[in-house]
Length: 398
Image (cartoon, rainbow, N blue to C red; front, side):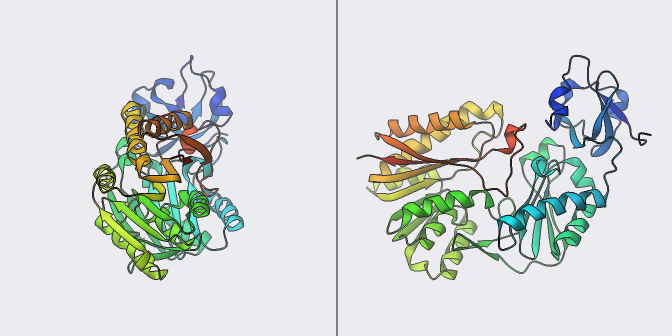
């Protein structure tokens, strides 16, 4: 017998096949949203039925969000408990332990790991949870407890910052749920040392998604002069130093992030090969051009310029402008890496914007390599948004 949960139902014209085949979201205009549905507290669970009243699974409901329902489990009998969460964590952990020798990775990548709207990054004995959906916010203590049980971490931090929580009607908050944080955490990736600030840093403190793209950039960096724009804590720049770059310049708007980049370089014994420039990236690109600066490798990894479909056109213009300003800084025969973490801008649109910008910057190009996020950021093929990261590496002629 089906458990006693409220029932929400698809409209007759909605197509249940996509959901049955793994698409995890149900939008407001696909549902019968009546008084009873609107009365379901945000983050609660319900049984989703198709228009013929056939159960499709357990969903979490949030009528404050355009994504009104997210599929939790296709089994309508399942109960979403701490044990259910622990099973998802165990499955995710088994994959990461196969992929990585040390416990520094994204452990949970939201829908793709079966925990909708939930991000967990692991930093050794510490983990940072981003509960970006109402159910995860409601069950944060259960998630944290299951996380400690499954992984053995002692420090768990809730990072409730960012645009996505606002879309869910959630407030911003940061809280240490257990353990303690005593300064930045050292993280080793691709032979480089990074310092991650788990409580005050951007997102969870470090971007693990670029790990394979850092590794590709390292193949271009030996003996090179490298410029890392929108560098955050030195992502591409420190990777280049670890690969034997002659010198790296990191550009970012955040003084705190650049301080962490310098700390990482010092931990690697490479502080004498790092220069930092704080300021608006577009202004700094123009200033470097005015100075006649040239680099063998230039990499630009900006924030999401197109975080939504409404922002797509303006976002693509911004990516084009980055490419136009960066291209003249690349020495003849050098390399330009351009990245986008905007899920609204697909690979084709981003590639076209980048190519237009390089052309407007007066350069001809070969596209050498197209990268994506690492395997600790698995994608759900039915959900394009889960495959958000794109990295393009070009060789530019004279």
